[in-house]
Structures are given as C-alpha cells and as structure tokens.
Image 1 (cartoon, protein in one colour):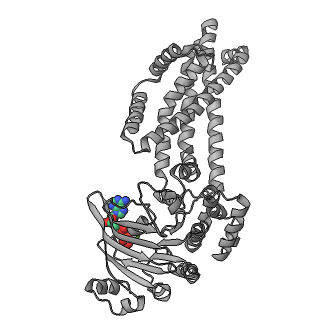
Image 2 (image 1 turned 45 degrees about the vertical axis):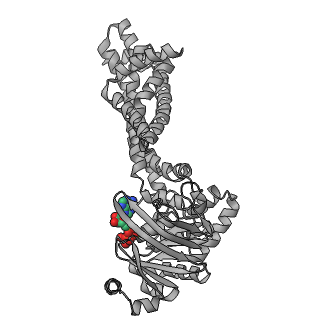
Amino acid sequence: MIRIKKLNKSFGSLHVLKDVDLSVSEREVVVLIGASGSGKSTLLRCINFLEIPDSGSDEISIMGQTVDPQKDNLNQIRSEVGMVFQHFNLFPHRSVLENVTEAPIFVRKLKKSAAVDMAMQLLKKVGLADKAKSYPDQLSGGQKQRVAIARALAMSPKIMLFDEPTSALDPELVGEVLQVMKELAKEGMTMVVVTHEMGFAREVGDRVMVMDEGRIIEEGEPVELFQNPKLERTQKFLSQIL
Amino acid sequence: MTAIIEIFIENWEAFLFATGMTLKLTAVSLVLAMVIGLVFAFFKISGSKILYSIAQLYITVIRGTPLIVQLMFLYFGIIQLVVLPAFWAGALALAIHSGAYIAEIFRGSIQSINRGQMEAARSLGMTYPLAMRRIILPQAFKRAIPALGNQFIIGLKDSSLVAYLGVSEIYGTALYAQAANFQPFETYMVAGCYYLVLVIIFTWLVNKLEQRLSVEQSEVTK
Ligand SMILES: Nc1ncnc2c1ncn2[C@@H]1O[C@H](COP(=O)(O)OP(=O)(O)OP(=O)(O)O)[C@@H](O)[C@H]1O
Ligand SMILES: [Mg+2]
C-alpha cells in the first residue's frame, strides 16, 4: 500500500528525515514510536504530501502508484489517505455532521442526502450519532477525536494515518478513541499510527518502528521489540515511556 | 438652542436626502473596499514577493498620505480615465482608501486561523481555493467583524470629505446651508448630530451581529 525508499526531508538546513525506507502492506497496522523531534509527524505528513519530500528522495508509491509531487494531483492522493491529528482540527464553524459531510460533498461531489446518510452511519460507528447537530466546542476531547476519525473515514480512504491521536486527551478519554481505532484495524484498515500507547501497539500493531533523529533505527513485531530491543537507544527510549 | 432647532426644522428635507446620500456613499465604498481589501490581503499572504510588494506599496502610500489629498488626486485621476459622476468617483476613491486598511484587517484575521485548519482541509483532498472558501474565510470573516465594524464607522465619517467633490451628503449640505443662513456654528452642530446618530445606530448593529455570532458558537478556534 505504501512503499517509500530513501525518503529525505529538510526544512532549510535542518535535515529532518534521512534515507527513510518504509513499506506497509494492505491491512497492516504499523506503529511509529520515537523521541520528540525525531521526525514521526514529518514522516506521516510526507506520506500524504502535506510536506513535499526533498527532490533527492528515491520513491514514494501509494497504492501501487509512484507519485511525483511536482506533476501528480496531490489532492486526489490526499483524498484517499485519511489523516487524524493530535489536536483534532475539527472545523469549529461547522456542526459535527457538516464536518463529516464537507469533503464528500465538495471534493467527491456527492449529493447532500447521500453524504448525510453516509455521515450518520459513520457517526453511529464512532458512537456519536446523537451529537450530529452539536458544534465541536460542545464536545469533549475524546468525542472530538472520534468525529475527526469519522470525518477522515467519510472519504473512504485506503490508508489512515494517525499522529498521536490520544496524546492531547485526558487519560480517562483515551480508551474510547483507541477502541474506535482498534475496530478499524480489525476491519482491515491499513494504518500508520504514531502513538506511545503500548497496549494499543501490542494488541493491534503488526509492526513497531522506532525513529531516532530522522532515521528508522529498529523495527519488529511489537511484543518481541518491547521485550528484547536490540539497540541501546531503543531500550533507553522504551524505559522512558513504559 | 432655539436657533439649532430652527435650523434643524428648516433643513430637515435637505438633511434627510443628504443622510441617504451619506449612507449610499458609505455602503457602496465599503462593499468595494471589502473586495479590494480581500484581493490585497491575498497578495500579502500569497508567498509571491512581487504581489506582496505591490500590496505593501499600496498600503504604505494610503497610510502615509492624508485622505483629502488621496481623494482629490484619485478624483482628478479617475475622471481623466473615465467619465464618472462625482458620486461614483468619490465612492471609488473612498473605497481605495478604506481598502488598504481592510486588507490589513483581512490579512491579520486569515493568518490568525490555526494552521491545523488548512492542514485538515487539505488532508481531506480539498484544493487550496476550496479550503480557503469553505474553511478559512468563514472563520476569518467572523473574527474580523469587530475591526471591520470599526473601519466602517471611520468610513462613514470619512465620506464627509466627498463634499469637496460636490456631492450633497450631510457635510456638503451643511456647507451649503451655512453659506446661506450665516449660522455656521448651529448648522455644523446639526450636521454633527446626524453623523453621531448614524454612528450610534451602526455601532449598535455591529454589537448585535457580534452577539448573535458568538451565541451561535461560543468559541472560534483552538
Ligand atoms: N514546518 C517546519 N519547519 C521547520 N522545522 C520543522 C517543521 N516541522 C517540523 N520541523 C522540525 O523537524 C523536526 C522533526 O519534527 P516532527 O514534528 O516530525 O517530530 P516528531 O517526532 O513528530 O516530534 P513530536 O513527538 O514532538 O511530535 C523537529 O526538529 C522540528 O522542529
Ligand atoms: Mg509529532
């Protein structure tokens, strides 16, 4: 589903991603961990081209199609890769329902009634059908994030990217969001998740990748990697978050 | 005091007509100014150095020269290019003036919208123009309302200078009346009252609008 070879990304003179290789197959759930500033968000943002990789990068292919950020229609690609942000980024001037129907109507050109039907289905799925008419500021953090997930799903993405979806939440609200993500994973969604929720990684993660200073330094099956990390850096990092 | 009331009664028809003129002038020039302001706000945030410089030059010149000079300059410039009645030339000149201030208001409010909004919109596959129109601008407009209201009040008062182009709005009417009745103090007092009442009504309307929008939604963005 995703194949990245020798991805590089710099901001000015700051070299943030260094020769990153990443392959994710269909229905796979990859968990990205790593210290703050190691480049996790930047990697996710490169996958849906919110950041344009440096021209030296070898290849990014999404769903079997090699993407040339200069030429290809990035909007088309973004519309098939869902993204969920740490700070939700719901549209505050639109109701919960409108947040979900906005892109299907204006990007996919769906009829309003069809979009509303689909949005209600998705809101039901994340347990928020009764909040359809509310505005984002009337919701708790956990509810906001579930709406954000429904909003991304409304574009029927083939891949979902999650950037620390629970780290802005009060501890008691983390569970409800993880629950929705676990269900998605079980339904076979291809997912790349930046999170330090080790329980989640163990339960649904197929692979964990550890980032450090712009490189993927270690990867492996979650239980194995958490118990016997090969590198000292990984050990050190895990001891901080476990 | 009685003199003032007399002047008020004597001239009420002329001033009523003049009030209509002032309102028309203000409305037309501010609608145009909003369009101009939006265009130049986009020039400033476009990322293009050339467009940015054009906008910056325009704003600097407008801010750095007196309105009456701009008005005369634009009026005589405009009527050389196209034949326009004084009303339209004046409205256009006022619009070019207010447009510079409104450009800065819009630029500020657009840039005050959290970057995450644009990112979320783009991540859903929206194009930049679509995301601007559907997601950023509605929030930015709402945030600009207090500053815009303020600019509108300034615009209303500034429209008085168009009297010098021969438009009989409130101030122009006073100018004409005091020359006939030899009572400048009282006449200008009456004119001042007309402006004051208009500004008070307008301020009240803006406050109402702000309240309604903030009830609809108590928070703007995080
Ligand atoms: N738009 C940008 N402009 C300049 N530098 C940036 C930009 N975005 C990220 N960086 C820098 O790139 C580096 C990696 O940032 P990134 O956000 O990818 O890290 P992260 O692993 O997601 O960290 P965190 O856990 O804190 O979210 C940091 O040093 C950051 O300051
Ligand atoms: Mg991050």
